[in-house]
Length: 401
Image (cartoon, rainbow, N blue to C red; front, side):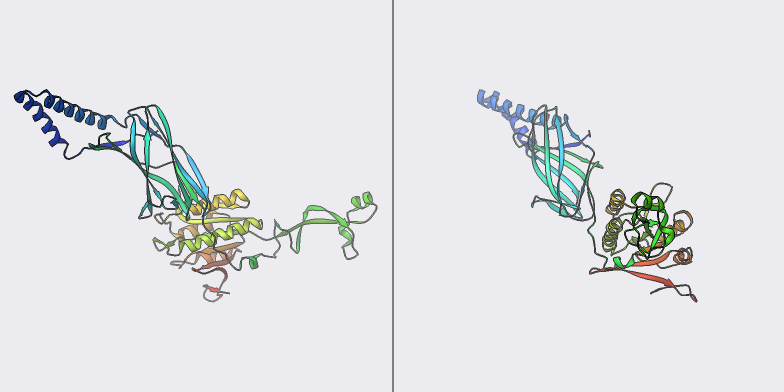
């Protein structure tokens, strides 16, 4: 539950009207008019109860700030659901204003949009000891996390003599997470390696002789030492051993969201292409890790997702990308690379996503010297591709291959 910040606004003409009602009561004694006296008393009582209502209304109203995380792909529909409970004075013909981040777009065409914030106003009424729910439908619009930032309730008096405003700016634990759109990386299929390694794959020239996968009928071209004698005796025909196909694989994606100390202008293109690669790696059962130079609390000072594959791993990566904000504190990219070299598990392939200009020493060369192949993700508004990088043996600098 949450507490409201409350203030009342009374009609500017209310003091003048109140003074007039008091003078009317006094004048009724001089003119000996009971009608004028009752009119004046009625007006004074009306103003008193108006003031009392504005002061007391909303004291029994509570909002349930429940924990809800909706996850959406762009263009999917969802809704904010706000639950209220009132044990105080009835609230009639009020207006509820809700503001939230524009990662989602409300269906209400009258909603105002300023500085990446939507504000939606809907009618609101609730009686004594009643529970009410307000639903605000929306459509997921763009990558990011949308939270309700402010709720404001404008409660008018029954007779129109002012209003009471309840408001609260808070960190809502109800949020809508929008996954990034994908930008197709055109040449990603050409990067499937055929080197010998330890990761299973559907087709490869190399096999893991410690991981038998079954048997098949013997062919004359098969090696004699691959005959499975027990299976041959059982089937009364020669059987050849089969082993799992393996290859060298494993990528690390290092994302530089910064341009010096500021967020880069092509951030969305980089993240969209990264999302496309994440989907591709999971489909191909290729393990991959992700480093993003945003400050993170923990043993690793930046965001790091250790190597893995599968649906759960993909979801963690997409959620991390969705949480990146233009106001994010940028961690120095060179420090991230230095930490990766000295503390984290090195992958056979290293993909640089974002701008990198070496200042003191080229840490990518150190990564390459440890056996990793270096690639760079090239993006623009129209396309995305991956370029192989190599080092000049004389000058030790990167060049496109």
